[in-house]
Image 1 (cartoon, one colour):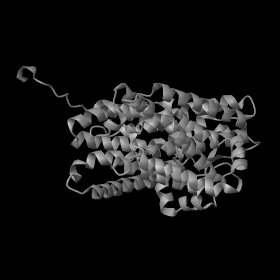
Image 2 (image 1 turned 45 degrees about the horizontal axis):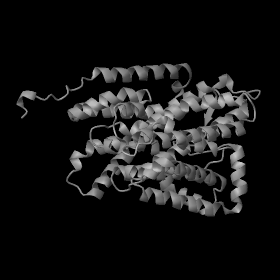
Image 3 (image 1 turned 180 degrees about the vertical axis):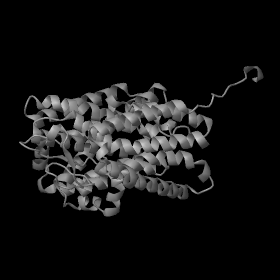
Image 4 (image 1 turned 45 degrees about the vertical axis):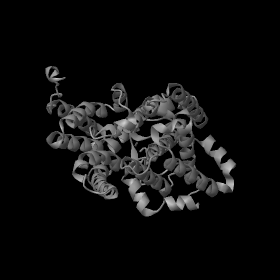
Length: 424
């Protein structure tokens, strides 16, 4: 669900003669969100805070449509990544794929590795046999960024699946984003070779979004829409509509269409999105899978762009509220940690009231997310020189090998057996 709405905050710097040194010289700027021109956009941090809050409330049983926070994350990811790529093309005339993927790895992998390792060892030590088996089965697919397809292959229904037997199931959305990060920059790089980059990227994003919508409508199953909800092909529009509004031609059209009414339009968009979050009910809201999710993603993309276009509007200023922004800054780690906390603490919290359980889950999850951000994410991302270049590649290889060893070294409990002779 989710980044990325998650902290894509890099700018490409000229390094001698207008070229990027070794095609890998990038400089982190601030820990908040920036966009074209390098302007800091606190409101987008706030949107990430709202997104993760919706997901938390959904998973703790308080907001039936809170899962739509993932769509807002997707739209933010598409917008910010595309803005980053277009800025790099503007400066260098191309996209360094190795540098881009290196930045994504340094941004996303450290916190994920910590969660995978800690949760797996903890589950193996104290979890039930069923949870241990699913954890060791799902882990390699998380590592390969293919968990969404693994879960679909197991025919696990999305809304029925969120029980107590899987601690990594929420990472399906991380897999979708990682697949996007792998493919979209390559397509943008190819487009950049033909000129008129902004216009061609806009056309590509709109065309693929339309195809993705058609696939969702055609493949949707009224009995269980899991396939279209978690499939990369049928969810691509959520990311690409964000990418669409990051292109200069679309931004120019929006600026002319909205004019001085940006504040009013922002309020209407936020109200509409909020109403959907309160009214939809997952699998029972069939209209979501015949165009509703597309409409929500489009509204989210427009909300994101207008927050950037009109940062002084009332809605943008409300979204820039400091506590909400801080929640957005830790949203990636908070998303990683919250579901394992819910699963592992569930039996111990059975005697508490519903809201007391929610408060405790949120407090533990936020605490772990803050530790992750300040002790793992930021140090590796901003201060660890070994995390870049050849040493970074070696570290990445070592981590991948270490995770593979983890999945294979821990013995899984034998499946429960049934003595047929004793039946009847």
